[in-house]
Amino acid sequence: MYRHRRGYIHAGLLAVTAFLVSATLVCGCGTPGKVPPSVSVKPGPLVTRKATKTSLKLPRVKIRPNKWKYVVVHHSATQAGSAAAFDEFHRNKKGWNRGLGYHFVIGNGNGARNGLVETGHRWTGQIDGAHAGSKEYNQHGIGVCLVGDFEGGSPTTKQISSLVSLVTELQQLCNIPPENVILHRHIRDTQCPGDGFSYYELLANLPR
Ligand SMILES: [Zn+2]
Image (cartoon, rainbow, N blue to C red):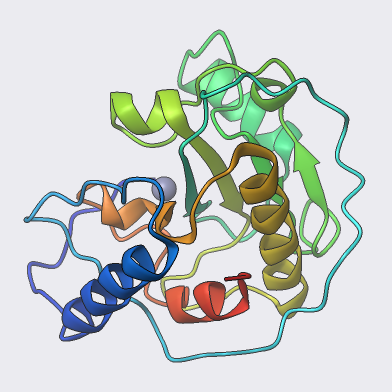
């Protein structure tokens, strides 16, 4: 979702920039996502819950070669939801005839089971997302939405474990380097996925 930025640049910008630079140097592969200078890369709280590996049972999909370069994380900015609910919203309220704009949705227990990873038809069909508000990131970014409003709230521990397991698997399947695992607010003038989402926590749990 899009929401107007509050017009400040957080001190965490420096920390994240330093992290991304060091991650690039360590990995030495891929191109980091372009971050427009006007966009906040606020990292969110210094939360570091340890994610437990969860069994995802993703459907087997023939991955389009060189199609996916990024993972872009969102929140739904709603208290409840599911892939079916967002599909209905995107199809009927937004008028997107391809429906659900995300590739994956991770439930929070309100509308879908807490930590459940639902696979959207844009992933099984290997087609562009409609989540980033940017052509590059819709074409080449895998959109993952966590159900919940993390402006004021934060993801559940099960959601983080599922997110880490999902992102790890997508990185391996599509050869996506960790510096290309980004938040919506890194590429667009939005708070998404909210101040309560910890970028540190996600990065700290991804394999290096
Ligand atoms: Zn978003």
